[in-house]
Amino acid sequence: MEVGVQSARHRYLLCGTGPSQRALNEDSDDLLRKDGLPKEMGFNQIDQAFVSTVADKRNNIPRKSLNYRTPLEAFMSQLNGVDLSSLN
Image (cartoon, rainbow, N blue to C red; front, side):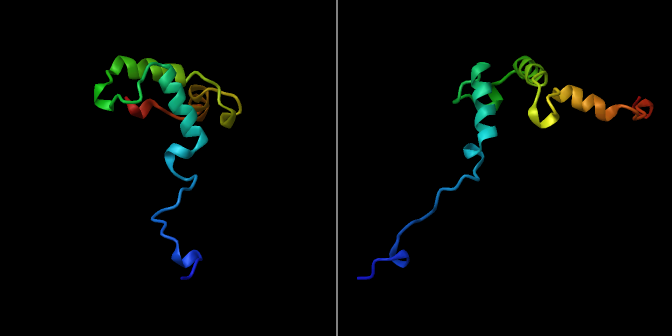
């Protein structure tokens, strides 16, 4: 009987590339849990008021990836100088 890699019966291997295994995703999930979103709750059970409240809260947190600006500040700086009159 040969004992080696060839005889292993692994069906799959774990790797750190799955969405639930990435640090940023884990941190975001934890923040949602702190805002009152239970792990078992489905998206069809969430009302718009809750989504808006959480979005407002999250969009006002400075991010290191945005040079410590909030997502709203970064978005508005991208709009600076853009002609928005055609959107009306």
